[in-house]
Amino acid sequence: MASGESGTRGHDRAALDEIDLAGELMIAASASRAERLAAEQIDEVLLARHRAPGPAGDGPADGDGGGSGS
Image (tube, rainbow, N blue to C red):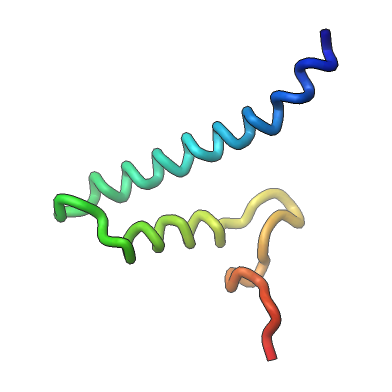
């Protein structure tokens, strides 16, 4: 029975991440005076979430998304 539980943890994590993101977008939308969030505002929410420090060693530390600089 325990073996069946381990297969759903990834789905649970993804679902929780989606719920968190939806919540952040709703907060941004409620703070906006416009009828809809502009694409730039949505990008800001998504980028802020991507740049947020996670558990140790999780995600880019410098906030630029990584990549190969010259």
